[in-house]
Image (tube, rainbow, N blue to C red; front, side):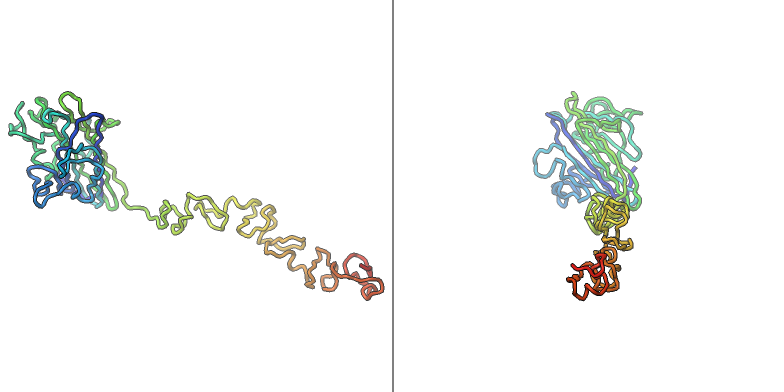
Length: 383
């Protein structure tokens, strides 16, 4: 069952204890694709904590195994509860195997424990409950202390779990259970899986004083009177490991952001009247065109309450800036006297004839030239 797998994976070991529970971390081991990391054990001496050339504690574990949130037994000689979270991450394509082993003592008598498997494991999932060992090998004879293979760490080194409960008693055919005298139980669980290029596996191993809320496969370790119980269960999630590109760090990946170089432009912002599609909905300045003439006030519409007044309208002589160029009635003052025909210039070819001309009094030259010089509708009238 051993596989050396290529993987991007995360192994999360979460242990939660109940009030008053006498639970203590006594031993642990990890196997990632054939590389082992052990706290203790007979055949794992090359990386046992405290041995020459070995680990000095959990701090020496590789970055793929994060134990910062789990209180595992360490080299400080202090008592550790074994409660918390451990995470392993792997992201290379190919076949992989990951395994975690935990020896937790649940009460005052560490040699008075038993174990049980509940429901059926998922595809690729393996497990074992066994005697971590103390005493002499009785080859599984009922009532005789048994030196189980969990102590030998063969399962850690080889990546092989037998999917059986076997502690201080004869193995029972068919069910994988063994009944008889309680012993010192320990639990292990692992996964075989494969990853395609760009995939990441996240594996959660949970050890809790409460069973899983769903009818998933899990292991149960108990003391003899059932005062203390711990449950080990696990899930695996394989997903795309490629982090989406987000150049402007606005929380929206490039494929959903219409301008991934400007953090102020993304689907989560409100549209502004600025000639830009701020909210990436494909429309520019929507909500800022009150008269519906396709021009906004920030887009050159000088009267957003009149759909005939906008930058592409033709200027007409009406005393208004129809085309929003800032000039009123341009093109309708031929003689350049400042007056157009629509604002009172009665002769737009003569700059000295417009409403602003001062005619003078009777007898002056303008009062005898038979012309309406000031465009008041009267000829030779005086001001």
